[in-house]
Length: 203
Image 1 (cartoon, rainbow, N blue to C red):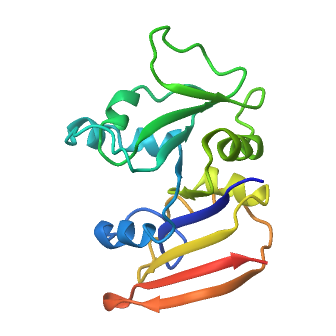
Image 2 (image 1 turned 180 degrees about the horizontal axis):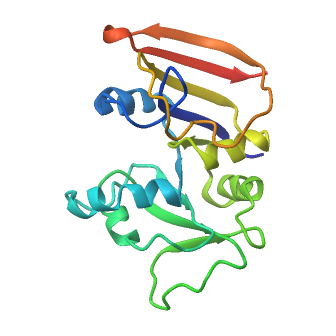
């Protein structure tokens, strides 16, 4: 069986994931609810944080932390050692496809290879459960990765920290997903400043 997959993200009223202030301490405190075994991110999200990662403290891997798995079909992520040492995760895992460009021969990064020219997300999740004993995977990004997971029916729960702002243009949390999904509200909790935490389960 594949792990339970949770999408947890901060969004504006119009579904944008950038262009407004987020209380990151509160956001990540909420994320501890699931005690995930794997944090799943796409290469775009990692690359967008490259400068922050390079300037961040490097205390080393957190032994009790989750595994960071990054979907990187084109092998664009390079700072694996720095990601491993940020103190957030126990280790890092690159999710590649058969046709992913060659990696440096001295790479110390563990790899999981599925799919031909792009990562097979369904197989990757099953292998995370089988090979890494993952029971809960938290998707910490919106956009194409979450949209692809939704499209494949691989998301079990959505957690949206909705902010009282309309951004207009910007990346949407659903990516290119445009089909209808019926959801069941599991919880709604308001916070000061008009922020609402909404949790939904898939029907």
